[in-house]
Every structure is written in structure tokens, then in C-alpha cells.
Length: 363
Image (cartoon, rainbow, N blue to C red; front, side):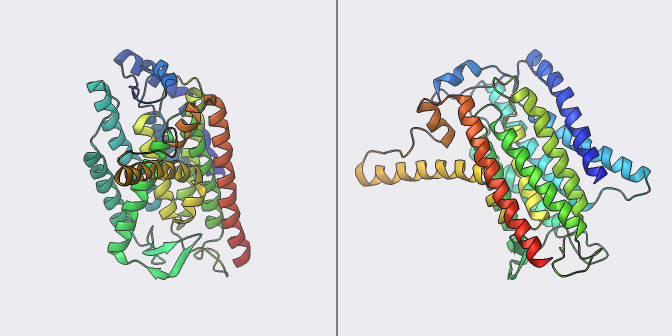
């Protein structure tokens, strides 16, 4: 437990102290955010705000994990485990894809960066490499970081996917989650605050798994997961990094995380869900992100359907994603953010309730 707190504390301090340095550096280099011309007009005043702040979140998360393991090593413990390194890999990998997207926006002075094909291609490479590696590195108990079974709060034994099926599922989860967080990152602090809640949930889930692994505590209801402590370290560091970044990203934001941050956070959520064997539970824990993504799908689908049927496309919402619908309806930005945080908190609480109910039922 102490190492988890250390990882979180180091990450929090690094994020709070280093983000202003990132702001100052990006201001000098002119790395400012471009704003959609067809978006809410109130956002035009945000043009030029430094972006790509996700580098501070990623760096703080990695630092918190490294320092925690250094202390473990000093006390005679082992080094980093495969699960923790894989979680960081998918975070950093998608952060690089997002960084390229942000950099193109800045260089070409437009609100669109990488083409959709290039962005999905980058996600595909990272997710496939992650999926393949997650089925390697068996420990003494024969466990790999991930399982080829579909999981909810633990593996669903009858639902075997096979190695190829698992890699495909990994891509679907990674792409869907990273794009969902990216869509949600449209208001100051919204994605950072909601992400911190999800990572907090994964910290508790992984810690409970660590205290009740079948390797150290072979009792009914134990968890057959590899390296749950390492997963908890990464989750705690990411949670603290988001909170530290939120200090500067809260409305009015002094810096945006950009696609660098949103894609990295979404990828990490997906990686943690796969490594903690809670893939389907991620839909509940990330309920806010699922809701925002669904609003975009409904908007696009209904517009295309009505255009085919009537020749004139109609919209369900004033604008998608969902938070922009409420902005155009006259809600203040801070009101939307706080209410969406409440929705995210309720989703995380419900997801934790589902996990803990299974924990008690099998304990």
C-alpha cells in the first residue's frame, strides 16, 4: 500500500510542478490550440492556449511508477513487472500518435491533424503489439498479463477468444476507449477529472486483486491475474497525474492536454481493463465516455438515415458530442463540467459496486 501512495504522491507533485514549465515552453514555441470554426463560438477565445499538455501527464505517470519501483528495489523487492510495463507502453504509444496529431494541427494551423486512416493505423499498431505481448511473459504460475477469455469482473470461463480473437478484441477496446476520451476532451478539465475517477477505480480494483491473488492466497474467489500490484502502481500514478494536471487545466484552462493526453489516457484505461481482466466492466466505469461517444454515433447515424429517407439530414442534438449540445442550449461551461463529473462519479461508483459485490459473493 505504501508504494502505491508513493507512486501517486510523486506523480502528483511532478504534474503540479512541471505543467507550468510545459505551459511556458509551449507558449514560447507558439504551440497553441486551433479551434473548430463550426463549434461553439464561445470557444474561439481559447484559440492559442498551449496544447499537448498530455506530455506532462504521461511523464508524471512514468516518473511515479519508476520512483515507486526504485523504493521497492531499495527494500529488497523485485523490479518492474510485465503488466506495468505493458500498461505504460500502450499509454506512451498512443500518446505518440496523439502528439503527431497535435503537432500537425499546430504546424498547418488547422483544427484537424492526422487523417482518420493514419490515426486508426497508429492505434492499430500500438494495440496489436500490446495484444501480442500481453499473451507472453508467463510467470511461475503460468499466468500471462492478459487472458484469451473475455472478462467482466473476472474472466468469463466459457467465452474463449483464442490468441487471434484476443488481439482483435484488444484493438477494438484500445481504439474505442482512446477515441471516446478524445471526444470527451472538449471542455476545460472535463476529460482530466473524469479520467482521474476511472484510474482511482482501477487502483482499488487492482489492490483488491493483489490482496486476494490465487498465487498468494489460494482461496475461493481469488483472482487469477498477474502483477496486480504493478497495475495498481500505474493506475495510482495516472490518477494523481490527472489531478495535478487538472490544477492548471480547470476552467479557464491555462493548457489543454490535446490528443497527446486524451489518446494516452484512453489507451491506458483500455490497457488497465485488459490487464485487470475487467474488460466489460470498463463500459460501466467509463460510463461518461461511453455516453459522449454514443451521442456522436446517434447524431451521425440519424443524420445519414434521414438524409437518405427524406433528402434532408436531421439532427438529434444541437451539436455532437453531447457537451456541445448543452453549450448551445445556454448552459455555462463550468455547469456542464461539474454535472458531467457527477455523472462520471456515479458511473465509477456503480462499477465499483458491481466489482465489490462479486468480491463479497465469492470471498
